[in-house]
Length: 505
Image (tube, rainbow, N blue to C red):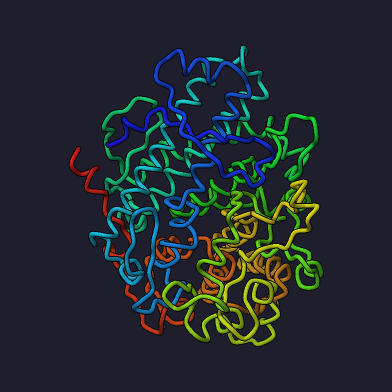
């Protein structure tokens, strides 16, 4: 693997603050053991390093573009793709139709794929360096609270990154779980690790890491007893606050449910999901969006941040909107929008009353297909000066509490259809939708769950993963690009390993 040159790269925030609006990074490269010891000689050094690995996720190569509203949503058929639509990230620029057409070997597309691979494994190596130092300094630099919070957080983040690599480069699990695919790196040593099967990645590595993370965070994560803590306390240590910007205890539970569901392990997926759906404390800490404030307020929380378990902060969020989604001011060469009529059909699903869906009314402009989920929240001069603006101003979601309900419903649709429908109706009510038909069939319920994923996660990259998990054709009400049907195939759903990786095999 081409990882050695990345081994000690730690991206460090220049200004810690409260994770609000800071985008100034610098590369900090410990040259030797002495420099590394200095970095991890204090609790502040550890938390600065943790902040650094999280801020790598914001880069356009990763969740700042490719793995959310950009590459993955193009591959998930979320947008109409005219011939002149261009896609750029880093030094790469290509016609978006190449991405939407799954032309992974294209000379301009393959470097984007390789950059995702390299950045993910680079970040994983940095995580392993921090974890190694945390073990060495437990009881000296780090007390039990800090040690367990850092360890649980980073074990979960390591699993999160490996899982998305598996979802991209691994096989369709239901078709070939024993196919060799990615590697799992839980060491700080740079070497060519052996490829593992998808089954081994999940059961020998992802689940053990997530179990260990859950154990650490269940007792030591303040989210359990104090909630998301999405505010700054002046003159106090704020490292353990803003829990939605970290893989907190509840986000770990949802990630476990995701992983088990990917493997078709519905019993364990259900058990993990129900720790969220059936715990009243969870909805107390992560309440469903207030529809009056959302639809009647001057500054709506279009990302529904109160109910998000994990996401990231991007002070350039409005630039995403103005660069790609501002239909009033952008030309077709850069505008990302679904095909005409798609959005209303997706949300109505045969019942016009459902166009009162809070997501439809708040995240899309009336009578158009313009996506405004990431549009700017207007701030007062005082808020700008004092950096006291609402938490959701720059928030970008990655994990929603609603997903736990979708997972629980999917796992129960055959064995307990009434309970499955109850889980779905909880979300229907929270979104201003009509309840499902009391006599809905198992197959129809599954189709509704799929449509809910599409409604809920626009701009977040999840549609492609859903289509791949089910190995399904993309067409009809699920295809936002055009009215064609794209047949499921390994060639479309399995990204090839980068050439640099293959050379070292």
